[in-house]
Image 1 (tube, rainbow, N blue to C red):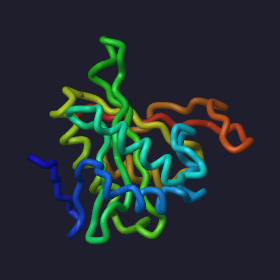
Image 2 (cartoon, rainbow, N blue to C red):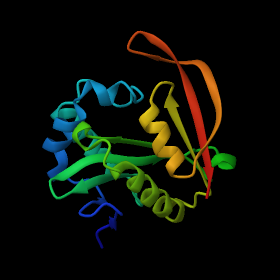
Image 3 (cartoon, rainbow, N blue to C red):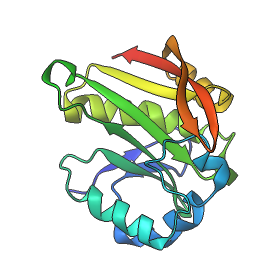
Image 4 (cartoon, rainbow, N blue to C red):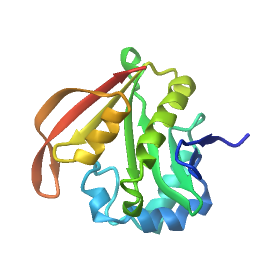
Length: 175
């Protein structure tokens, strides 16, 4: 059965990645304003080959770890969780997400994060989520706060991104 999680924003849902997402993924993800707030696991440039590599990797996980945020126009972003291989941390997943720039400010991401966390907690046996945000990313911090996360600390000078050293703000939520 295909995974389909409706969001509170009408017309939007979460689903698994498929090959039909490749062009749209490459188009939306190849945006410096998205890349600048994500780890370098998110490549730049984000071309068709990067999209293909990502979609192929997703097929290796059952249940999936990363889902498409989709609307009437198809893929608009993604949300996922990195799971720990260390047994005493296996209950805590690190949340990550991105959204195409033209969809910012519409409440889509807050709804996607909330729906994803409820699903991922059950699917992966998680009882806690961690999220890390580069200092200065007020939009992402606001999404997390709307979804019940609390700021747990600041890792000073923890990130090198695009030639700059940045602080990282750590958020957590027990579910």
